[in-house]
Amino acid sequence: MEEIWTEKYRPRSLGEVVGQDEIVRRLQGYVRVKNMPHMLFAGKPGTGKTTCALALARDLYGNDWRYNFLEMNASDERGIETVRVKVKEYARTSPMVSTEFKIIFLDEADALTADAQAALRRIMEMYVRTCRFILSCNYSSKIIEPIQSRCALFRFKPLDQEDVIKLLKKIAHNEKITLTESGIAAIIQASEGDLRRAITLLQASASSSKEINENVVYEVSNLAHPEDVKKMVNIAFKGDFEGARKILDTLLMDQGVSPEDLVKQIHRVLYEIAIDDRILVKIIDRLGEIDFRINEGADPRIQIEAILAYMVASHKG
Image (cartoon, rainbow, N blue to C red; front, side, top):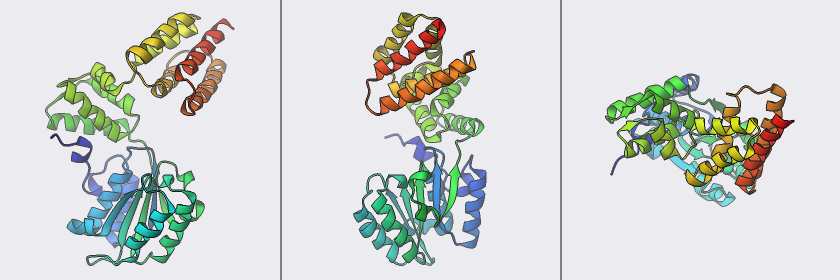
């Protein structure tokens, strides 16, 4: 069975991590002094939070890192009993090899309930001598203030395109696949700074074709081709609602594009079209409301048709 590339090419030490130079520099400082505070990693998915936590443990403990590192996904075990039993039991025991502390890595910590977070803050205080916590989250605002004040905060930024491109080309070379410039551009646009998603798209594309171009990428990612989205929006702005609606039907029904992804693509395309700023502001405002409605369970086709109708009305108005 073919190995998952996101794991195959995951950096094994902090020195191999790309795109987060300042964060790596700070973490390497903790490795040098063999000590660290509780830490809070915040940022978008696929920016290196889990990778940095694993690499930090390897650099601190060497080959024995697994004996002193517990990884938990807080979205799976998010209740107060998990914190009181599993986390507390691990935190209170001494390290298994010659080191002063162990590490508990709580991934997706912003999924923890308020009660679980309240219990966790006390455990972080009581067992700081034997255990340090690394909390990873997408939104630090969902972590209660008492925990935030106990942690050193690390904000992970989306990776630069140059870093993503460099790694994609390296993987393509190692795996002996042809990656065209249009394929790279499509992966960059589809991944939006999420390196994990970029590598996953590359592997999915490679499984269907040895030459990866933009058509292959958009096919496996179930995203609409940007030119189709731009054509639909331009037709709407020209006042042709039926024409724009036909393209929408093709994208949603024939190509199976996700409505949530299509809303994001429409948002991106709007900045590539010459539109009066006053109209653009109103459309972006409506688009945000429509995105919220779709996520709350409203009919996605009706909602996207509504934004197309608003574009048509803005032309006629």
